[in-house]
Length: 234
Image (cartoon, rainbow, N blue to C red; front, side):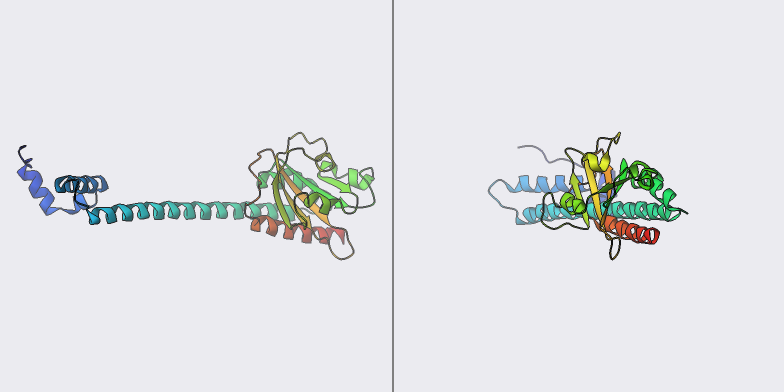
């Protein structure tokens, strides 16, 4: 039979005077509980120990959820700041040509996308001098193209469509130097009597835009953009 362990008198006095040192140390408490279970033998079920293990597991899950909620809140705040900055830069334009060119310039950089394209349905084509003057950011398509493009995998077009891209559509991206692997498509209501438009944000990262992500901020950006477009078109 082994002799019981002897604790140093000074250490014993310190622990008795400050018991919270042990209570606050999770590893120490686990070791004490494990020692207590061993002393009771294998045939005794320690209900208190089982309850403690379940409480610890529940606490770990709560802490993980708490960290996830905080991370999501920070991510949402960062996304909101990006959208606000992009809108303010977009509204700084003093003329329509600058407004359009900024989309694929500073506005796109703020949004952290590789390219921005505006698609307008019209009976004209890209050979129109007014269209060509605006560069690659603007492309035109026949009536009905936008809804067909947006409903590749569903029946009704949504205001915001997020998806991964296998083959970039040349009618939208043209000779774009970036290989677009994901895109956010914002359907635009340009006002009564006008055909719809579509703002496309393209990214090389295949995971930047994908189904299941939140679309509230992009929906807000699209709402501001279409109102700005109505003002310019009028």
